[in-house]
Image (cartoon, rainbow, N blue to C red; front, side, top):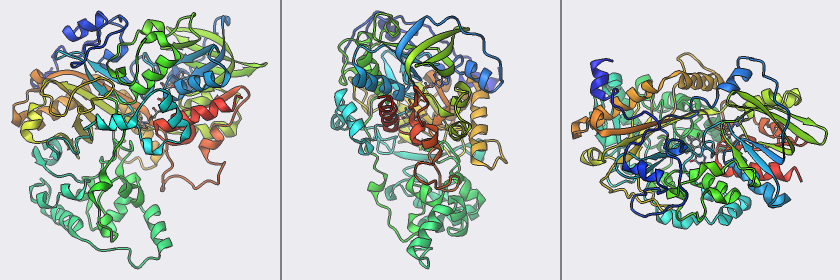
Length: 620
Ligand SMILES: Cc1cc2nc3c(=O)[nH]c(=O)nc-3n(C[C@H](O)[C@H](O)[C@H](O)COP(=O)(O)OP(=O)(O)OC[C@H]3O[C@@H](n4cnc5c(N)ncnc54)[C@H](O)[C@@H]3O)c2cc1C
């Protein structure tokens, strides 16, 4: 190990799994969830096996995807399954929000006593709705490992009905939330230029490259460690107000905005050279999972990137409001409420006011005495219609098992479906393969205290030169019983949010996404660890932070199959209604129907729910 790695603390014993780190985790062993201050306890849980407490590589964690990759990518022949011993009314493939919601709707449609089995390849339920629990630093800290927001203003009646039935009060969630990705924290936002990329470490507080008018970088451009030419271009760009498309008709204007790349616009209409443009390169890694240059002008401006001032418009502060509903573990709380509804004994007495601090008893998930069973670490490898039902094979612990069902809802990624359901038509398979998801990375780092952030006057930082495009303090979500306000002085998770840039020279969008996905899977935990340690050390070091001392835990949530592919201006056709790939991909196939957010070509939790309702409705 290099001296630098030692200074950064890469030899620190923080990441070893399944250890009782301290009293926090010990109390979990005794059945107490050791919340911040409120107390709530239910079932005793086994500490070593409690999936949300696992650190290290999470998301697509080792052990979750190898079986699928072996047969889908490498063509390894599947073993013969054992004789079919189990039979259910419904088998759901995929235990994400969509799969859990499918079980919920099936019970509503066919009756509470229907026998349902949910199979998922991960060691925890929820899919992208991933809970990261930390017990270092004296109390339970929660962080969001995947899907964050409830975008309630987009909910339709179906989704609203489910949210209400689970007892979730969005207004209350909003009242109990101050968190806003570091944008409106106690301190504020900043841009961090790192020495490796820009020759010098420099934190510039009070501004953002893509924020509201009050955070304009214009007054700070002199401090940017970039060439004088690039500064002058940016000064012009942020300072100019005119309509550079004034000579276009409304129709031509719309065509321009949707058919022109944002970087092309920055170059030809805003006068930014490559150096200035590159500052925006990873700005959409978190929100889209792709390079900013893949977006059209309309998409980029809709995302909050600068440029409206060159279209004769005046951006307002409220354009950047994002008043979503949050739980401190994101939509993992929604997944947990669904699981609790389906299998009440996993956490008796749980409701939206204590869901975030409740300990779940995972040994209740897969019991023959329950009408709904959730079976984890089970990768489905084959599904076919036979007679009046569906036969499935899945691998678990190196063995192949068979199961029979009257109905099956496939709530897994669509790109795997052609391999699992070989008897589908070629047309449907091609449509399903069209879904190449956007890779996402969410790395949560528990630090001893927020003091260094406070000393520097920041809550959220964008990092134009780094692997993760942004980072923010994950606190200020006091919902679900969890308490950690923005000003809480104790240990706090820092969330690094982003994706990975593809290999240079890859131009096609889907190839870029695949390249990024491969990089994500090939990087080792140490690579991610070195990155976040050196960012925190160099960013916070001037405020007394020492990575080797002040980092308590690291959880890397990598999502090589992240956001569902939403159609993009520059890369996708405008298909007639009913002919878009996701509409062809989700057509009922015998007793098999298709859910997942992929079925709606929209990367939202409410889409996952809507598609579950549709998929179950088709079985009626
Ligand atoms: C980092 C991140 C942040 C996000 N943030 C938001 C947000 O803030 N708001 C929002 O609305 N949406 C967000 N999303 C989108 C999110 O994808 C949806 O909200 C929703 O959670 C998707 O649910 P799903 O059930 O359709 O898919 P998933 O959550 O992907 O669940 C599908 C499950 O099927 C499993 N599976 C796949 N193949 C097999 C197989 N062969 N056998 C068994 N199981 C299999 C998968 O591993 C997975 O567990 C985010 C996504 C990511 C990755």
